Each structure stands twice: as C-alpha cells, then as structure tokens.
Length: 297
Image (cartoon, rainbow, N blue to C red; front, side):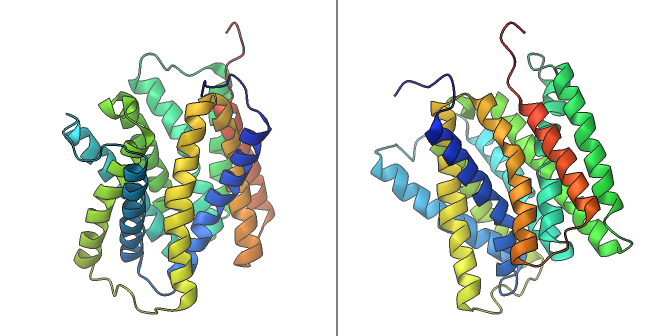
C-alpha cells in the first residue's frame, strides 16, 4: 500500500479514536491503582503487552530473535520508556489524572526543543517557537492551579519528568538504528525491557504488589494491556506508515482534552477555569508545534 500524501476520512476517524483511547490511559491506571501498586501494575502491563506483541509478530511472519546490531540502543530506548512510565505511574499516586494528562502531553515541546538543540537538521521554525511559548504559559497556569499541597505539586513534577523521558525516547529513536526497523520491533524493545525492569523496581521499592484483586482492578489492567499498549500503539505506528507524520501529529492536541474531560466525567475530578485555560493553551501549543510545513517553506 502506497503511503498517502493527505489524511482521508478513515485516518481522521482513527486518529480521533486513538486520541480518545490514549486520553483514557491515566484514568484506567488510576482505577487499577486501587488494587495493584504502581510498579507492579506497570510491569504486568508490559509483560502482557509483550506476550501479545510476540504472538502478533509471529503471526505476521516477522523474525523476532536475531542480532540486529542495535541491542545497546534498544536497551537504552527501553530504559527511557521505563522511566517515562515510572514517573507517570508515581505521579498518579500523588495528583489527579487530569493534571498527569496535561503535564505528560507536554512531551512534543521537549521533543522540538531537544531536536533544535541536538539534531542539526531539525531546527525550530517560528510557528513552533510560538507554540512552545504558548504551551509553557499553559504549564505555568497549571502549576499555579496545583494548590498549596506539596503532594499535588510533587505529582505534577513527576508527570513533567515523565514527559521529558518520553521526549528523550523519541529523540533517541530518531538517531538510533531502530529508526529503520519495523514499528513492531521498536515497540518490542520498549515493552520487553520495561517488563524486566518494572518488577525489579517493585521489589526494590517494597511494594505490596496485588493487594485488592477485584474484577474492576483486573479489567482496568486488561484494558491497558490490550487496548492501549497493543492496539493503541500498533494503530498509531500503522498510521505513521500510511499517512504523513506531521499531519497525524497535529491531531495529538485532542488527547489531553479527552483525558481531562474523561477524568471529570469518570473520576469526578474538578474542572476549574485555571485547568481549562491551561488545557487550551497546551492544546494550541501542541497543534502549532506539530503543524506541517506549508509548501515552499
């Protein structure tokens, strides 16, 4: 199938569905935290998703075990992926799902900033700089609405650290040999390494593990494994192979919007004017940062 030069109705519907799905991620994790400690939950998620991904790759006839000459890079990508979710899961213990969603999706700005500083061929455009400034104004407003509690501010900072690790993962993939490998293999490195590291972190942190094994808790975990870690990621990677990456990325401003709305509707988290203002600014910044170049520029 030849990659398309513009989005059609199918791509638009799939992108909106993926943004809704990824926006639900923090809410589902929050549910599962009622019965499974953070690192154990992240480990079970990665282990389950790794198994399903291996089955899927095998079914497609993709070779799994071979020396691709990029093991070291793969481990680094997996470690950064682990750090991203390490901070995200801990953040959800200390602050609201809406705040975690907002701060986590500042990742595109750190990617653009990092690429500008370290990748000579990816200098920031004026529109991206404007988007960056708008988004950072939104982040400042969000921190201003964190309240006086040290716990909430700690959670917000942890979510921000997760966003930076997510950005670092993206930047490393841009320069690593993995950039020329299949989407499934790149995802396999991330899931497999995190499936090993998260249980070790759980033991080192003396977590209780599974302490409230209810149907709701395991349903939330299963949703993360199947719908987000496998279907969501593979759907995104498939879209990247069929449609322009820049145009697809411009839709990601919808994800924090869906996430905050879902936290309000499902978890009954407060939807303050400060949070709405911060969300609008961050969403506008994401759109401008990812907006494709106009022809001739």
